[in-house]
Image (cartoon, rainbow, N blue to C red; front, side):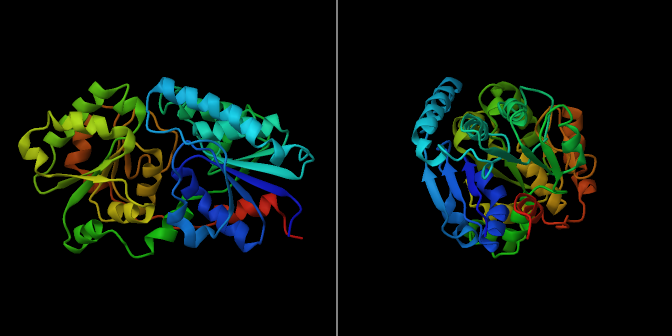
Length: 371
Protein backbone atom coordinates (compact mmCIF):
# COMPACT_ATOMS: atom_id res chain seq x y z
CA UNK A 1 0.00 0.00 0.00
CA UNK A 2 1.03 3.63 -0.52
CA UNK A 3 0.24 6.86 1.25
CA UNK A 4 0.53 8.84 -1.96
CA UNK A 5 -2.61 10.37 -3.46
CA UNK A 6 -2.75 9.53 -7.16
CA UNK A 7 -4.80 11.31 -9.82
CA UNK A 8 -4.92 10.42 -13.51
CA UNK A 9 -6.16 13.15 -15.86
CA UNK A 10 -7.81 11.74 -19.00
CA UNK A 11 -9.45 13.59 -21.89
CA UNK A 12 -9.92 11.08 -24.71
CA UNK A 13 -10.44 7.37 -25.31
CA UNK A 14 -7.05 7.33 -27.08
CA UNK A 15 -5.40 8.46 -23.84
CA UNK A 16 -7.32 5.85 -21.86
CA UNK A 17 -6.18 3.10 -24.23
CA UNK A 18 -2.53 3.92 -23.49
CA UNK A 19 -3.17 4.26 -19.77
CA UNK A 20 -4.96 0.91 -19.42
CA UNK A 21 -1.68 -0.98 -18.77
CA UNK A 22 -0.74 1.52 -16.04
CA UNK A 23 -4.19 1.20 -14.48
CA UNK A 24 -3.89 -2.60 -14.55
CA UNK A 25 -0.51 -2.41 -12.84
CA UNK A 26 -1.82 -0.01 -10.19
CA UNK A 27 -4.74 -2.35 -9.52
CA UNK A 28 -2.41 -5.34 -9.35
CA UNK A 29 -0.34 -3.53 -6.73
CA UNK A 30 -3.52 -2.39 -4.92
CA UNK A 31 -2.55 1.27 -5.33
CA UNK A 32 -5.63 3.49 -5.04
CA UNK A 33 -6.08 6.20 -7.67
CA UNK A 34 -8.71 8.58 -9.03
CA UNK A 35 -9.42 9.30 -12.71
CA UNK A 36 -10.39 12.84 -13.65
CA UNK A 37 -12.30 12.93 -16.98
CA UNK A 38 -11.81 16.33 -18.60
CA UNK A 39 -14.86 16.27 -20.89
CA UNK A 40 -12.85 16.84 -24.10
CA UNK A 41 -14.43 13.70 -25.57
CA UNK A 42 -16.88 11.03 -24.53
CA UNK A 43 -14.45 8.48 -23.08
CA UNK A 44 -15.44 4.86 -23.68
CA UNK A 45 -14.63 3.46 -20.24
CA UNK A 46 -17.09 0.61 -20.85
CA UNK A 47 -14.82 -0.87 -23.55
CA UNK A 48 -12.16 -1.56 -20.95
CA UNK A 49 -14.30 -2.52 -17.95
CA UNK A 50 -12.73 -5.98 -17.71
CA UNK A 51 -9.25 -4.43 -17.70
CA UNK A 52 -9.57 -1.42 -15.43
CA UNK A 53 -12.19 -2.57 -12.92
CA UNK A 54 -14.28 0.14 -11.30
CA UNK A 55 -11.97 3.06 -10.49
CA UNK A 56 -13.21 6.27 -8.92
CA UNK A 57 -13.97 8.65 -11.79
CA UNK A 58 -14.59 12.38 -11.40
CA UNK A 59 -16.39 13.94 -14.37
CA UNK A 60 -14.92 17.36 -13.87
CA UNK A 61 -16.61 19.48 -16.55
CA UNK A 62 -19.36 19.34 -19.14
CA UNK A 63 -18.38 17.59 -22.41
CA UNK A 64 -17.57 20.01 -25.19
CA UNK A 65 -20.41 18.93 -27.47
CA UNK A 66 -20.48 18.53 -31.22
CA UNK A 67 -18.79 21.69 -32.51
CA UNK A 68 -15.43 21.29 -34.20
CA UNK A 69 -14.38 24.86 -34.98
CA UNK A 70 -11.08 26.12 -33.62
CA UNK A 71 -12.79 29.04 -31.89
CA UNK A 72 -15.42 26.82 -30.29
CA UNK A 73 -12.82 24.37 -29.06
CA UNK A 74 -10.64 27.16 -27.64
CA UNK A 75 -13.58 28.64 -25.75
CA UNK A 76 -14.41 25.19 -24.37
CA UNK A 77 -10.81 24.73 -23.20
CA UNK A 78 -10.70 28.09 -21.41
CA UNK A 79 -14.10 27.62 -19.79
CA UNK A 80 -13.24 24.06 -18.79
CA UNK A 81 -9.94 24.96 -17.20
CA UNK A 82 -11.61 27.59 -15.02
CA UNK A 83 -14.24 25.00 -14.07
CA UNK A 84 -11.49 22.52 -13.19
CA UNK A 85 -9.74 24.98 -10.91
CA UNK A 86 -12.96 25.67 -9.04
CA UNK A 87 -14.56 22.23 -9.19
CA UNK A 88 -11.51 20.28 -8.03
CA UNK A 89 -10.53 22.64 -5.26
CA UNK A 90 -11.81 20.33 -2.52
CA UNK A 91 -9.72 17.46 -3.93
CA UNK A 92 -6.43 19.31 -4.18
CA UNK A 93 -6.29 22.02 -1.52
CA UNK A 94 -3.92 20.96 1.23
CA UNK A 95 -2.35 18.12 -0.80
CA UNK A 96 0.80 19.92 -2.03
CA UNK A 97 3.02 17.97 0.37
CA UNK A 98 5.01 15.88 -2.14
CA UNK A 99 2.76 12.86 -1.61
CA UNK A 100 0.28 13.77 -4.34
CA UNK A 101 0.92 13.07 -8.01
CA UNK A 102 -1.13 13.89 -11.09
CA UNK A 103 -0.50 11.75 -14.17
CA UNK A 104 -1.14 13.12 -17.66
CA UNK A 105 -0.63 11.32 -20.93
CA UNK A 106 0.44 12.43 -24.37
CA UNK A 107 -0.35 15.66 -26.12
CA UNK A 108 -4.03 16.62 -26.08
CA UNK A 109 -5.44 19.92 -24.88
CA UNK A 110 -6.73 17.96 -21.89
CA UNK A 111 -3.16 16.85 -21.12
CA UNK A 112 -2.09 20.49 -21.09
CA UNK A 113 -5.01 21.41 -18.82
CA UNK A 114 -4.05 18.62 -16.47
CA UNK A 115 -0.44 19.83 -16.41
CA UNK A 116 -1.53 23.39 -15.63
CA UNK A 117 -3.86 22.06 -12.92
CA UNK A 118 -0.93 20.26 -11.27
CA UNK A 119 1.17 23.41 -11.32
CA UNK A 120 -1.70 25.52 -9.98
CA UNK A 121 -2.18 23.21 -6.98
CA UNK A 122 1.56 22.48 -6.53
CA UNK A 123 1.31 18.71 -6.89
CA UNK A 124 3.88 16.49 -8.58
CA UNK A 125 3.30 16.22 -12.33
CA UNK A 126 4.02 12.96 -14.17
CA UNK A 127 3.95 12.81 -17.97
CA UNK A 128 3.65 9.48 -19.79
CA UNK A 129 4.65 9.34 -23.50
CA UNK A 130 6.93 12.31 -22.96
CA UNK A 131 9.53 13.64 -25.39
CA UNK A 132 7.79 13.00 -28.71
CA UNK A 133 8.45 15.78 -31.20
CA UNK A 134 7.65 16.64 -34.82
CA UNK A 135 9.50 19.97 -34.45
CA UNK A 136 6.67 21.71 -36.32
CA UNK A 137 4.01 23.56 -34.34
CA UNK A 138 1.49 23.21 -37.19
CA UNK A 139 1.70 19.43 -37.60
CA UNK A 140 0.28 17.78 -35.65
CA UNK A 141 -1.79 20.77 -34.47
CA UNK A 142 -2.34 21.61 -31.67
CA UNK A 143 -0.60 18.54 -30.18
CA UNK A 144 2.95 19.71 -30.86
CA UNK A 145 2.24 22.99 -29.09
CA UNK A 146 0.74 21.10 -26.15
CA UNK A 147 3.82 18.87 -25.88
CA UNK A 148 6.11 21.86 -25.86
CA UNK A 149 4.35 23.52 -22.92
CA UNK A 150 3.62 20.32 -20.98
CA UNK A 151 7.32 19.34 -21.05
CA UNK A 152 8.29 22.61 -19.39
CA UNK A 153 6.04 21.83 -16.39
CA UNK A 154 6.79 18.16 -15.71
CA UNK A 155 8.53 16.67 -12.66
CA UNK A 156 8.90 13.13 -14.02
CA UNK A 157 9.00 12.33 -17.76
CA UNK A 158 8.38 8.75 -18.88
CA UNK A 159 9.79 8.50 -22.41
CA UNK A 160 9.30 5.58 -24.83
CA UNK A 161 12.91 5.57 -26.13
CA UNK A 162 16.31 7.28 -26.01
CA UNK A 163 15.38 9.61 -28.86
CA UNK A 164 12.47 11.00 -26.84
CA UNK A 165 14.75 11.50 -23.82
CA UNK A 166 17.23 13.40 -26.00
CA UNK A 167 14.45 15.73 -27.10
CA UNK A 168 14.03 16.82 -23.47
CA UNK A 169 17.63 17.98 -22.96
CA UNK A 170 16.50 21.57 -22.50
CA UNK A 171 13.81 20.96 -19.88
CA UNK A 172 14.04 20.05 -16.22
CA UNK A 173 12.59 17.04 -14.47
CA UNK A 174 13.62 13.40 -14.13
CA UNK A 175 13.66 11.45 -17.41
CA UNK A 176 12.98 7.71 -17.39
CA UNK A 177 13.16 5.41 -20.42
CA UNK A 178 10.25 2.94 -20.62
CA UNK A 179 11.78 1.39 -23.81
CA UNK A 180 8.38 1.23 -25.50
CA UNK A 181 5.13 3.13 -25.46
CA UNK A 182 2.51 1.71 -23.09
CA UNK A 183 0.42 1.36 -26.25
CA UNK A 184 2.25 -1.85 -27.10
CA UNK A 185 0.81 -3.51 -23.99
CA UNK A 186 -2.73 -2.41 -24.82
CA UNK A 187 -2.27 -3.58 -28.40
CA UNK A 188 -1.18 -7.10 -27.49
CA UNK A 189 -3.80 -7.26 -24.76
CA UNK A 190 -6.67 -6.82 -27.25
CA UNK A 191 -5.20 -8.50 -30.35
CA UNK A 192 -5.17 -11.84 -28.51
CA UNK A 193 -8.92 -11.61 -27.95
CA UNK A 194 -11.62 -12.66 -30.39
CA UNK A 195 -12.99 -10.01 -32.69
CA UNK A 196 -16.57 -9.08 -31.72
CA UNK A 197 -17.53 -6.97 -34.75
CA UNK A 198 -19.49 -8.98 -37.33
CA UNK A 199 -18.34 -7.00 -40.37
CA UNK A 200 -14.66 -7.23 -39.41
CA UNK A 201 -15.02 -10.97 -38.77
CA UNK A 202 -16.57 -11.40 -42.21
CA UNK A 203 -13.73 -9.54 -43.88
CA UNK A 204 -11.15 -11.74 -42.19
CA UNK A 205 -13.05 -15.02 -42.64
CA UNK A 206 -13.62 -14.36 -46.34
CA UNK A 207 -9.94 -13.46 -46.71
CA UNK A 208 -10.99 -10.28 -48.53
CA UNK A 209 -8.12 -8.11 -49.75
CA UNK A 210 -8.53 -4.62 -48.37
CA UNK A 211 -6.65 -1.66 -47.00
CA UNK A 212 -7.67 0.75 -44.26
CA UNK A 213 -7.90 4.50 -44.83
CA UNK A 214 -7.98 6.94 -41.91
CA UNK A 215 -8.05 10.74 -42.24
CA UNK A 216 -9.18 12.56 -39.13
CA UNK A 217 -6.62 15.21 -38.19
CA UNK A 218 -8.08 18.71 -38.17
CA UNK A 219 -5.11 20.22 -40.02
CA UNK A 220 -6.01 17.86 -42.87
CA UNK A 221 -9.82 17.60 -42.93
CA UNK A 222 -10.58 21.16 -41.79
CA UNK A 223 -7.70 23.50 -42.61
CA UNK A 224 -6.01 21.58 -45.44
CA UNK A 225 -9.10 20.06 -47.01
CA UNK A 226 -8.19 20.81 -50.65
CA UNK A 227 -4.69 19.32 -50.42
CA UNK A 228 -5.96 16.23 -48.62
CA UNK A 229 -8.82 15.75 -51.11
CA UNK A 230 -6.44 15.94 -54.08
CA UNK A 231 -4.04 13.45 -52.50
CA UNK A 232 -6.81 10.96 -51.67
CA UNK A 233 -8.22 11.20 -55.19
CA UNK A 234 -4.76 10.42 -56.52
CA UNK A 235 -4.36 7.48 -54.14
CA UNK A 236 -7.79 6.00 -54.88
CA UNK A 237 -7.22 6.35 -58.62
CA UNK A 238 -4.00 4.33 -58.52
CA UNK A 239 -5.03 1.44 -56.29
CA UNK A 240 -4.77 -2.19 -57.41
CA UNK A 241 -8.13 -3.32 -58.83
CA UNK A 242 -8.49 -6.22 -56.40
CA UNK A 243 -8.36 -4.09 -53.24
CA UNK A 244 -11.31 -2.78 -51.27
CA UNK A 245 -10.96 0.47 -49.32
CA UNK A 246 -12.27 0.44 -45.74
CA UNK A 247 -12.72 4.12 -44.90
CA UNK A 248 -12.89 4.90 -41.16
CA UNK A 249 -15.33 7.72 -40.42
CA UNK A 250 -14.37 9.82 -37.38
CA UNK A 251 -16.59 12.54 -35.94
CA UNK A 252 -14.28 15.26 -37.21
CA UNK A 253 -14.11 13.85 -40.73
CA UNK A 254 -17.83 13.25 -41.48
CA UNK A 255 -18.25 16.44 -43.53
CA UNK A 256 -14.91 15.96 -45.25
CA UNK A 257 -15.72 12.38 -46.28
CA UNK A 258 -19.13 13.46 -47.59
CA UNK A 259 -17.48 16.18 -49.72
CA UNK A 260 -14.87 13.71 -50.97
CA UNK A 261 -17.63 11.30 -51.96
CA UNK A 262 -19.05 13.91 -54.33
CA UNK A 263 -15.91 13.96 -56.49
CA UNK A 264 -14.83 10.30 -56.45
CA UNK A 265 -15.54 8.43 -59.71
CA UNK A 266 -18.27 5.80 -59.47
CA UNK A 267 -16.00 2.84 -60.19
CA UNK A 268 -13.85 3.77 -57.19
CA UNK A 269 -16.85 4.38 -54.93
CA UNK A 270 -18.00 0.81 -55.55
CA UNK A 271 -14.81 -0.48 -53.93
CA UNK A 272 -15.12 1.78 -50.87
CA UNK A 273 -16.82 0.78 -47.63
CA UNK A 274 -17.35 3.45 -44.99
CA UNK A 275 -17.39 2.26 -41.42
CA UNK A 276 -17.94 4.24 -38.23
CA UNK A 277 -15.63 4.24 -35.24
CA UNK A 278 -14.91 0.75 -33.95
CA UNK A 279 -14.11 -0.37 -30.42
CA UNK A 280 -10.34 -0.49 -30.03
CA UNK A 281 -10.05 -4.28 -30.07
CA UNK A 282 -12.11 -4.59 -33.26
CA UNK A 283 -10.15 -1.82 -34.96
CA UNK A 284 -6.90 -3.63 -34.20
CA UNK A 285 -8.36 -6.79 -35.74
CA UNK A 286 -9.36 -4.74 -38.80
CA UNK A 287 -5.78 -3.49 -39.15
CA UNK A 288 -4.36 -6.97 -38.62
CA UNK A 289 -6.28 -8.31 -41.62
CA UNK A 290 -5.43 -5.43 -43.95
CA UNK A 291 -2.87 -5.50 -46.73
CA UNK A 292 -1.73 -2.06 -45.61
CA UNK A 293 -3.06 1.18 -44.12
CA UNK A 294 -3.01 4.80 -45.22
CA UNK A 295 -3.47 7.06 -42.20
CA UNK A 296 -2.70 10.44 -40.67
CA UNK A 297 -2.79 9.04 -37.11
CA UNK A 298 0.35 8.90 -34.99
CA UNK A 299 -0.95 6.07 -32.81
CA UNK A 300 -1.87 4.15 -35.97
CA UNK A 301 1.76 4.48 -37.04
CA UNK A 302 2.82 2.68 -33.86
CA UNK A 303 0.11 0.02 -34.06
CA UNK A 304 1.04 -0.82 -37.65
CA UNK A 305 4.68 -0.99 -36.56
CA UNK A 306 3.72 -3.58 -33.93
CA UNK A 307 1.83 -5.55 -36.60
CA UNK A 308 4.61 -5.20 -39.18
CA UNK A 309 2.01 -3.91 -41.67
CA UNK A 310 2.90 -1.45 -44.46
CA UNK A 311 1.82 2.08 -43.55
CA UNK A 312 1.67 5.21 -45.68
CA UNK A 313 1.58 8.16 -43.31
CA UNK A 314 -0.43 11.09 -44.72
CA UNK A 315 1.74 13.76 -43.17
CA UNK A 316 4.68 16.01 -43.75
CA UNK A 317 5.96 15.48 -40.20
CA UNK A 318 5.59 12.81 -37.54
CA UNK A 319 6.32 12.97 -33.83
CA UNK A 320 7.24 9.28 -33.64
CA UNK A 321 10.15 7.21 -34.94
CA UNK A 322 8.50 3.77 -34.79
CA UNK A 323 8.57 2.05 -38.17
CA UNK A 324 10.31 4.82 -40.09
CA UNK A 325 12.62 3.35 -42.75
CA UNK A 326 11.11 -0.12 -42.20
CA UNK A 327 7.33 -0.51 -42.60
CA UNK A 328 6.28 3.16 -42.40
CA UNK A 329 6.61 5.62 -45.30
CA UNK A 330 6.15 9.34 -44.67
CA UNK A 331 4.24 10.60 -47.72
CA UNK A 332 5.11 14.31 -47.48
CA UNK A 333 2.08 14.62 -49.79
CA UNK A 334 4.48 13.70 -52.60
CA UNK A 335 2.82 11.80 -55.45
CA UNK A 336 5.99 9.94 -56.42
CA UNK A 337 6.51 8.65 -52.88
CA UNK A 338 2.84 7.75 -52.64
CA UNK A 339 2.73 5.88 -55.95
CA UNK A 340 5.91 3.98 -55.12
CA UNK A 341 4.32 2.81 -51.85
CA UNK A 342 1.04 1.74 -53.49
CA UNK A 343 2.79 -0.20 -56.26
CA UNK A 344 5.29 -1.88 -53.92
CA UNK A 345 3.55 -2.09 -50.55
CA UNK A 346 4.52 -5.75 -50.08
CA UNK A 347 8.19 -4.79 -49.71
CA UNK A 348 7.31 -2.89 -46.50
CA UNK A 349 5.92 -5.93 -44.67
CA UNK A 350 7.85 -6.86 -41.52
CA UNK A 351 7.63 -9.27 -38.60
CA UNK A 352 5.37 -8.20 -35.70
CA UNK A 353 7.02 -6.44 -32.74
CA UNK A 354 6.34 -8.00 -29.36
CA UNK A 355 6.71 -6.74 -25.79
CA UNK A 356 10.11 -6.77 -24.14
CA UNK A 357 10.13 -4.81 -20.90
CA UNK A 358 6.64 -3.81 -19.77
CA UNK A 359 6.47 0.00 -19.81
CA UNK A 360 3.66 0.02 -17.24
CA UNK A 361 5.77 -1.93 -14.76
CA UNK A 362 8.69 0.46 -15.23
CA UNK A 363 6.37 3.42 -14.62
CA UNK A 364 4.68 2.06 -11.50
CA UNK A 365 7.95 0.73 -10.03
CA UNK A 366 9.52 4.17 -10.52
CA UNK A 367 6.63 6.00 -8.89
CA UNK A 368 6.12 3.47 -6.10
CA UNK A 369 9.39 1.66 -5.35
CA UNK A 370 8.86 -1.69 -3.73
CA UNK A 371 9.79 -1.86 -0.06
